[in-house]
Amino acid sequence: MKYDHILIRYGEMTLKSRNRKMFVSALRKRMNRALDGMDVHIKTTRDRGYIDLLEADAYQVIEKLKHISGILSVSPVVKIEKSEEEMKETALQFAKDFGAGRTFKIEAKRSDKTFHLVTFDIQDMLGGYVLKNTDHLSVNVRKPDHTITAEVRHDAVYMYHDTVQCLGGLPLGTGGKGLLMLSGGIDSPVAGLDVMRKGVEIEAVHFHSPPYTSPEATEKVKKLVDIMSERTGYDIKLHIVPFTELQTTLYDRIPDNLSMTSTRRVMLKIAEKLAGTTGAEAVINGENLGQVASQTLTSMHAINEVTNMPVLRPLLTLEKNDIVNMAKQFGTYETSILPYEDCCTIFKPKSPKTKPSLEKVRKFEERVDFGPLIEKAISGIETYTPNSEEAAAEFGELL
Ligand code: ATP
Ligand code: MG
Image 1 (cartoon, rainbow, N blue to C red):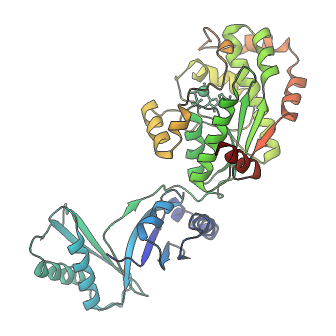
Image 2 (image 1 turned 120 degrees about the vertical axis):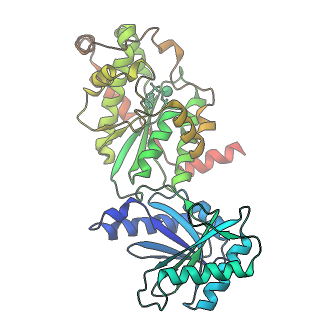
Image 3 (image 1 turned 180 degrees about the vertical axis):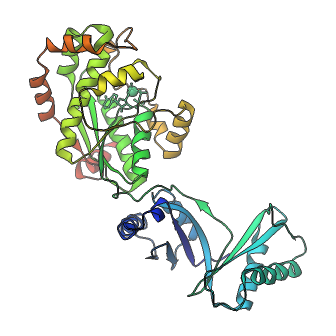
């Protein structure tokens, strides 16, 4: 089938009647960027979008659209005149192209109420024509193998057979900004991408402790940011915090079974300060209830106490298996499972408390002046931006 357009159905933003214009224009911007260099023309209206496929291949364009949040689904379509003959021939073309499966139905949508045939008549006409001109098909309206849709609109008739589900959610840039706590593990990249799907732009923060953590571990986090940026068409800035001095101080001064709680508290304090300077309104992490000692409700309560900022945990109640599948789908999994640890084993407490006492944590922390160390760590932050000159130079070195 030679398609000439792609029909774009919007996601949840169809609910946002007053902000619709802003959502549509944000989505348009994302599509422009994703389809840059392709021979297409993008048109958006209040309730749907069309891509005019000048010379581009429909499914190559759809591959790009699939990853844009705010698009619920797309269909490659044939746009024709409002003529019975053209509609019949196009329906037959679709039927001849069906893959496996012997049953079909015609679905007509008639938003042009002046069209001379009503919905039922259109279905009857097209169904009858297809049946008469093929010998292996039959109609099944309940559970057809194939559906051919004919939408009669004011400007033209749009016909299609295939609908591809996309990411849904909201266009990036319509939901403010968040700061993602990004480790090298499986969970946090997925958490970030999931929040981006709802329109939130992100910057990321990573804590490393050289020489206890290896350069490869930091490179791995940069690579994750590259993948996430490529995937979303949005360059995610990564702030790398030198954490060694704080890490060793925590190790020396806080009892082993509470050090994980204090470490997370200090990280969150730094993240909160950084959020203030980047314009982020929330911190995002990859925590999952019950996964490890620091991720029980009691632990989260003790850690969260250091900030008033919302801490978003999009993966909180998911099954690990589902998170792994999401990571595979997003393309971050293979990098996440590389062996380089983002935290040195010598700092890993032998038996971290699953129910840390906030009172005890506070008592031990009071004995140490973390303030200057926190300030020093913040002033030592280095920022990496994907697709920047630095990223290009690093890529050059790899070749
Ligand atoms: P992940 O796969 O995301 O590393 P995890 O299951 O290994 O998660 P933890 O290591 O306990 O869990 O980390 C919980 C969350 O704390 C992470 O999802 C991440 O958001 C944040 N975090 C942990 N370590 C770091 C780090 N070095 N830098 C930035 N954030 C971190
Ligand atoms: Mg981890």
